[in-house]
Image (cartoon, rainbow, N blue to C red; front, side):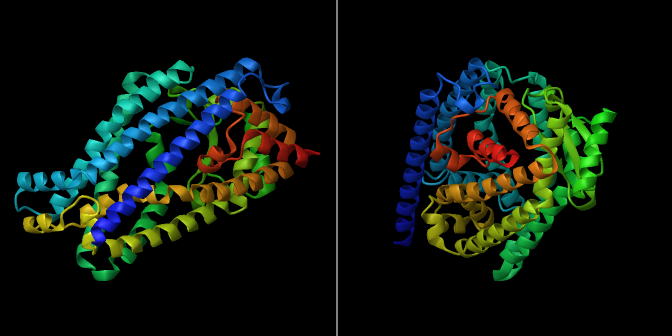
Length: 426
């Protein structure tokens, strides 16, 4: 009875989220095309019509491609759950491995699931890079580098992910009813460790980072950091142009390991005062403790989800409602902890999608605050001009549908954001 009710609930939410996603996408396409013919008045003097129309076409193309990807992802989700794909995979893996180590069986199940999912995603990733991005002039990545990155990602994921999975599965099996609390401590520590290792160990596996050579710009940036009280391990330029023409800047690391990184594409486009303003915005996130707040929120949410998983993994209706027969699995003698993890990971995005605007609202509040911080420590007009160039270079639409943007965009729409900055400048 409970399993049938859960199946009905899952299907209902699945259909609802799919309908909402298609409705939002259709709104976005109609809204962008309706404003394609003219540049918004506040940008008319700075962005050519051709660039505005390119951004509209790029946005529409990405949205349509996203709908195709969404349909495939939902079909795969149904295949793994309601149509019994995960159970089939679990039973066949048991037949192949026999009564071997339960831990190796569970890790093998997760690895097999990841491999199948990766193979399904591969053609879409390839199309996105070499057809969609290529069509609009953003792709600079050779095919060899695409597959090299993919191989590095698989090896890195295995090297980092498999030991973490082993620890979590061991806790699930041997630490009793509070396994989820111990797993949360492990997960939180792992996240903090990745923040420390990413800038110096992981990121250099994929990109080349060289110290900023422009002494004038370096002096300007160091002056800004001194004014706002930010200590960095260094200023670096990343060779982002070997993959994409998109540009950005960010700082990464944790504690004393923080470093500031500029895409080479960004440095080639912006003036020194504009680069300073963009960096002031990023430093605003740090000084206003947005990073700490986001980490704290991530830890709190992950604790809640792990507690929920701790309950669900003991409920037969959770498995049966998602196409997995607990009785058939019990006959194999294999544990179901890995299956619980996979099922939870598969269905969680379905049940949390409608909460997206809450996450976006918090993120947008932080963006406005970081903009205000930048306007205090640099010229607001410099940040405005930098943003306009970045919108143009990245083909970001200036006229997104407000509701679509509320669900998907972590940053405020261009017109709203720049209006706030001009108010600060005035």
